[in-house]
Length: 134
Length: 134
Length: 134
Image (cartoon, rainbow over the protein chains, first blue to last red):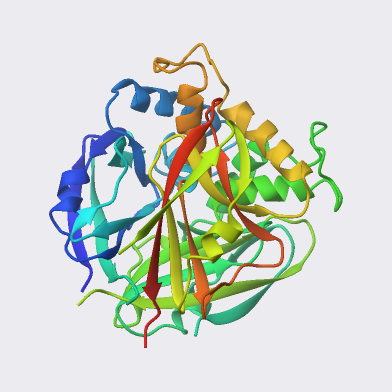
């Protein structure tokens, strides 16, 4: 049965969840992480420099600005529609190979939950493991 | 054997195909949806507000405009290259966890086929189910 | 055990790896390709026109420019942060259905490794096959 973990976010920004995911794994095949939301992302990003998240934020805010005058959908505030488009661009799930329960990530890859809404949220991640072919 | 369903699109815009997909499923594991095209997308999007698709269209048209003077590839018209870049940004496939044949979507998540070409098309979606690990 | 292949890139640009992937496959289910890097992408793209890659490059360079004055992360040069954002937008992995060892690609879909860094690199692709449900 797929497992669900909850991640509490402090509002817009990045939370490294590599360890939270790693501890749920076993076996060899694929690990799939699925966010049950349309306003936050799961991404792989450079895990060493604290400047990379700052620059990712700068770049995505140019193509998905808060409070754009063209938005029709703003029920929940100026970050509402921006969060939906950020999710479209940055994605909401990850599929990662694993061997004997270890994620086969590159040296610089870490798993991040990217909260796109301004305020703190509780986010649900569904973790599914599937076996490789014989 | 992976199953193929065909979706007829009315030209650029969104078609909710959540039910079309749901009826093909059984078992627990992952469901994978794959569009065999480079000018349309499969996305998860907010399924309640009719304004969200309008705003997604506004935002993506800014970064993938029709008839941009810089395009070299325009064999099939001003929406040709725009459609390819939209597909790159918005994606062409989805992987969704399922339990006992039910998609484990969040409350606000629906599955949409996003047609990027101006004219109606017939689009092929390959549905593959894989079992979770024991 | 997932298999790793290495692709040598000539610097920024596209390398068609469809045949390199195809020869590693067998069985029916899903094939997953995973790049262990945060500055290159795996994408499906139109495989016929040499103009499409040129236009993809034009469009992505507008939203992820080299040497943007706003970047804080530039340890490895002006293409460093641009490469990370390009990877976020264009993706780092692919999941493709296969039947009896054949990729179920559409007529116009080819698999490309898109190098985002200016200089040549050696890139590792993890190939994992998973079986479909019974």
